[in-house]
Image 1 (tube, rainbow, N blue to C red):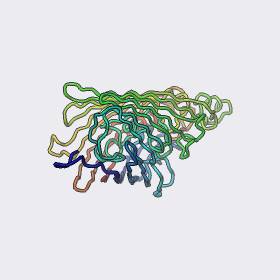
Image 2 (cartoon, one colour; image 1 turned 120 degrees about the vertical axis):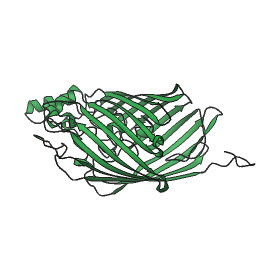
Image 3 (cartoon, rainbow, N blue to C red; image 1 turned 180 degrees about the vertical axis):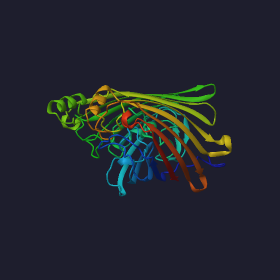
Image 4 (cartoon, helix red, strand yellow; image 1 turned 180 degrees about the horizontal axis):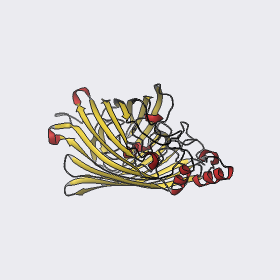
Length: 426
């Protein structure tokens, strides 16, 4: 950007933003024949969750920046964020204490190397400094962050603070991405970006225990790698994007098949945490697409898969997932700051995972003590975001329908989940 009749305006060296999100959520009373320790409760009061994040960015030198995000989270999800694999509130964590807690969400260094002379203007945003950015570049990111900050992006369905709330809509359900309980990890991300395609690779730490709060620093025996190719294209004058992601996790996971065999031999309920062994792996992939139909309406879809032989280690207990949805701005009805979204998702698990739950085993998010009649989780979600730009806020009523929670047709419901979300960002 040039100043009138003058030289180029200097790019700002600081970026400062804030967000706060509150979600109040309730589900109908259920009438089920049995339940387990990790079942969705038949009856419970509404639950409130909240997060507050400060986004601080500082330019250090040419192409170099440091990002620092302290965060506070509190409250609780329905049933302690258990009982549905595609859980209904992406702003909750499986942490027993609902008291507000302050922690470090992100602290990482980003270095960008221009690979050509062309630049484009980059707006000041969350963890993004304003100024010219090369259109063809190599970037290195080192420190603490969320892997989902860089991978499996989707303009319609990726942020539970402003878009769909369901876990299996905010990210590919079967992508067991490396993270601690709150969704963050430590490692590095390498990006190669051009105007038409991008390639990203990450190597990061995994938790010491499944969904645990502590990361395992024994990198030789515990780590995760993620690789993603992104292609931007134009179809009939409307932009589309496809992403292909592959991942491999290595950790001291337990084998579902071994846990079931040990349980049968002892006559006890199988426990996958009792058969941990170094070097176990989980591999999988995700395909992610979005296509603009008109200036107001965009369609999106994801499919994802992992082998499901060893226990889920970080994200959620989904081994196969497929979703389809659409998002529209409110411009068509003279509400340009509003947004309407609707989507459906189907989640499943591997035969080994299914046999483990059927024998009475528990994961870290689902477990009804039995699984006599397996059925894929089927979830629909609709939300309407009412934009309040004067107050830098949005209020979003949200409805989700869940059939076969935790893959259990004996407890098929259906579960009706109603929420109201307040999001403030500036």
